[in-house]
Image (tube, rainbow over all chains, first blue to last red; front, side):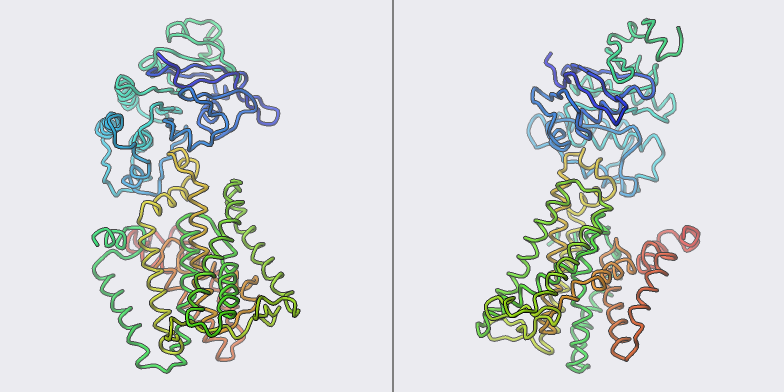
Length: 239
Length: 346
């Protein structure tokens, strides 16, 4: 399997705070990776560096073999990156239809067909009507969370970054989200998820990266990670 | 044809029902008929109220739909007026001079707005700074034009004229057809109507939708693959050209322009017209622009000194009681949510 997204010695500081410290990651094409870590571990900053919201102080981001460290966010998206935010950022004042029509659909070749199937699957499983005139802000919380994922899928990404997609969801809704992500991953979508909910992580991920104080603290399968004494201490709060 | 109709009756502006379009057609019909029952002087006054509408529509697109408040739209009004005066003035006697002058005026607006906007948007300046930058730009323009009183400030045969302004600007004409008096009224009416309908189609088009998405959340929109800098710049240029249309009509109406047209007072007026009507509705802005121009003009021409004070007070009332604009509150918020919900929110 080829590397689809990589970072090399990525670093970012905000004033005196080191948010990301020498992070080197390799995400393989077709992988479903979870990134976990306590609050302030630098997970969201890492995502912001990956998608181009922030520029790193040093280090590189490589997307599909191309150096993208200096590329603005929209160009990375055009290369196949998609991202949802930690706090829901669907367009609350626009209708569901508008939310789903704003992303640029992938161009009409064979590849696009596969991407559109993923999108159609997500719409159906999440129970979203792409023609609905309801304002997104009036949707129940679960639908709103899913709407943002569906929006990003409408753009046909090859790699999807999700920042706490299950925040505020019930256990049942969380399981549904996990099911959709597993299905999308099986259909070829590379997914990187930042998550707090360990049961969710256990359900979806084969490989887990633990961030702590901006650094990669540990990497391995979920069983290796939960058995790791130091990880239990910093993250799970148990020795 | 079907596409045009779909864009015209899109949900982004007040009025999709058949009643709306019947009323709209009746209003336009009336405006075409009106000159038959009024004097030439009155038709000229009405042309003046109408000719400010494109300027306001441009600001409505930029502020209400794209989320960028410009306090300096009158700069482009002035640029178009002055450039038209220079080009058409130097081509006096040529029956196509005014048309060439008009094109030059609009082109100048587009070029200046593209240059200025490039630095604002590509530097990713935070959007709350845009009103200050645009205001400074128009005040600089006023200062510059104000010191052009000397004889050396002459382009060809045309004097810029400092604070006395540029006078003797030719009326609009196409070949032998000179637009003066009643014909000028019809010319303004057609141009304003075309501007309104184009803006209405624009906001329902994909470009308009993306601008609204940028207004809602620029970062989210960039992360859906849009170069938001280019989109905002395009909206800025369109708004500048619309302001230029008003500038052209203004100098073709009054045959003069002075630097006060790009000064602080004039810069504030379009913001008031748009805020009073409701910045996210084109039809609301068109109506409020017409009515407020009629109000200030009638008050000042009847010898009342307080026209602008009244307009300023109106802005305060709107900001306190109708933050979404009076016409938008009456035309969209009340029918949709009921007056109790609206009153409790305000």
